[in-house]
Length: 397
Image (tube, rainbow, N blue to C red; front, side):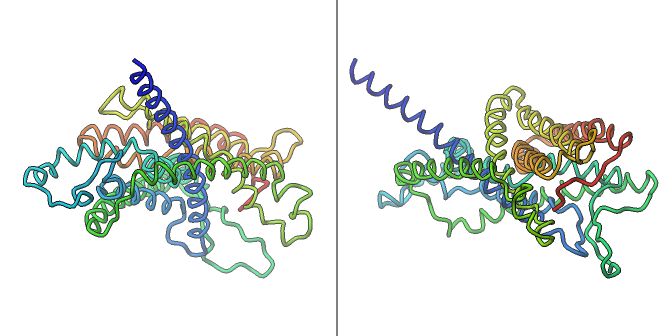
């Protein structure tokens, strides 16, 4: 009886530890994924850039990594401590080689999705590196002719440079703009997923296997401290944002446009809640309808709605207040959009699910996601755009 109670106690402790490690990896990799997305967006929005919606490249990059992780069979070959044939110093038998078929591959794919580090990489980093809500935002902005575009022509000396000024166009061009954003994003992200899959197979012989017991005993506990320390540190830094009225921005015109620091800090603060909510919502809801991942669909649409409301608040003047509530208020809203909404919604998981579903059901899932997402933006952002109108936000990166 005592031995049975001890075993149940150890199992409970192990389950709690796994939950803690999973949450910690999600927290850390959501912050890293958000910073990677923001950095790549800023790097790819340059004068004369051939693609103006710069979050495309973050969506492509995150989906490529997702394809690699989903197909790879070496990194987590030890699964939950299983010994490999190489570790025990023998060759595979014919029977064991036969198990290397479809059944073994499917079993490994299912098991590794329960490993905290894999969840952190796939759900935390890839899911936060990509953003469905930003994809829907730019789809709407292309429809309303408000999509910011890089400058590719000279301005008179001293004239203010604008990346958001547009010329009037009729509805046919707006329709083609919407098609361009949707088709380019889905096609390139799906291609990136397939490239990631092929890359995993191509370098399989060179891919190392992570030692499970070493990670469980040393690396996982270490990342608990790093993850929670990083998040708490971001929260503390947000109390004293570098672009507050008494901060560096008040010390001269050179600092007047340096608003990215505060935006990045607030994005780091709001990233973990988004990633954690997406993970647990998908865990609970995706199995309800096997042919339609309800959890991913729900968080993508909810995150899109929240981003649309944040964008409205950031671009309108309420009463005598500054647009978006002033610089700090604008940065908080940007942090919610980039951090919470960016991590709550995902393109990489969405594309991977489309790839795994039967053809007809994948078309239904993809069409419903884009159709409902864009319709949500038309209602939320369009109701403000076509009545009150958008103004330039107080923080402009």
